[in-house]
Image (cartoon, rainbow, N blue to C red; front, side):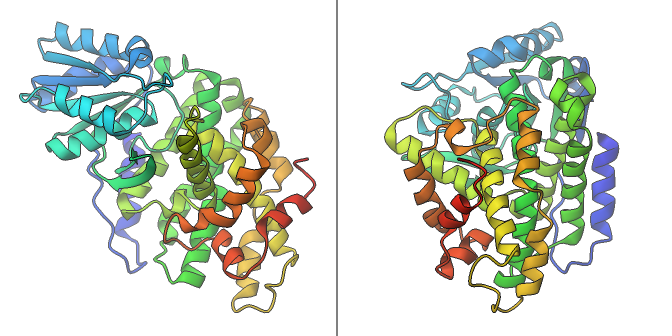
Length: 400
């Protein structure tokens, strides 16, 4: 993937969107079989000698033990920090986990390896930010686009908030490890990528109606990653070597774009706002968390169906300024049946009911989720103009 990293950097050099782009601090991205064997050599070249490996009980078995053994055999001083689960048996990026890793990371540590999926990466990137240490990513599932991003969604006092921290300086994504991940994790990764359909549309809307910054080059890179997944959906559904590689490359690319922009707009629109709203409500009720990508996938189907109805003129917005542009943006979204078919192919949930989201929670989220962030989306457009998103949702007839 290092050629892709160079390609993205080159595209951004020629960007004339008028907004400053950040340097991408990632030095190396290895996505292939047996790449864990490359970790000691990279650390040696960086002159890092004391390494902390952050994992949980499951990811230790998946890759953490092997990585630690490789480092010990190469003469590194290593410490394994195994993040403890909470009272519900889950590893969460909350205060307890953050404090545990902060306290257990030895003072002499030169670098921290995050071995796991999204949650463990969020914990590690926050600790690296606080301790001013470099972070190395070792993903164990193609489940989320946050591996290469700098944003850390953390749970603070029961509320989800994203803090800009650091991105990894290197990624070692071993396909042999990723292929062993549960199918639900792969389905979550595809759900997170399909969310780019509505997030990219919302980003255009935010520029048009909210005067928020927009970069066509960054949008195109994200779109190409999304299209690569759709074009190879059969390989991804089989979870074969090529399919997982394509999905992981797309997820990594999405994260790189966020780093470059300094925000998540191309990858996070109303579908993510619904997901975050549901997550915070589950936290409030003490319920077990749902996979991020699974929520995003379902939320994408919901928002795409609503937005397509908007484009069909089934509301009172046709007289608004820029209506034709808004209509054209949302009219290009995939039909909900197509999105459902793609997610079904990887055995992912496709309705709020399958996900376990009640009608009451769904209704509340469609009216309130747009308030979570100061970001203009179609969901905010509807609520600001007193157009009922829940009525538009039920009018589709697809989900019930």
